[in-house]
Image (cartoon, rainbow, N blue to C red; front, top):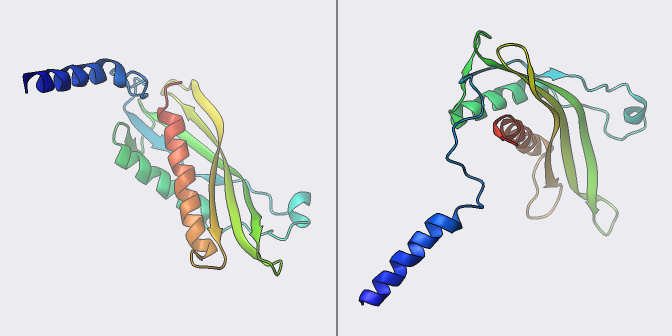
Length: 180
């Protein structure tokens, strides 16, 4: 019995020392000196009159996409909790985002050549600036989801858009808080 307890304690100690070393968590503090963030309203820069859209079957951009994305980003940061969302830019990080593209593509077809599954992509250029105006991060984030048009997992495009917006907002949050 003593040997069994000793082995369990030894294994627990080993796991605490070595097992958590590669998991990505750190005991270091947060990487920004600011603890507040201003999230500017997302701007929709999707050009629905472009040549590539003119020849596409999917020329429409979802209605109020930028407002829905802004609200979801704010909600993600509120749940995250380490950066308080504020409206004053004094002593706060500033996050600005621009939607640059919305894509819909067919992934699978039925035997009768009807679309069975589609993928949605949302490309967002994000920029994070500190309280002194220095650009800390600037990158493109791509949100993505797929959905079925038929079958047992059938869903609507509007429902898939909600998942797409949630994925893009999660990736924006991760891009802001990631250390490397």
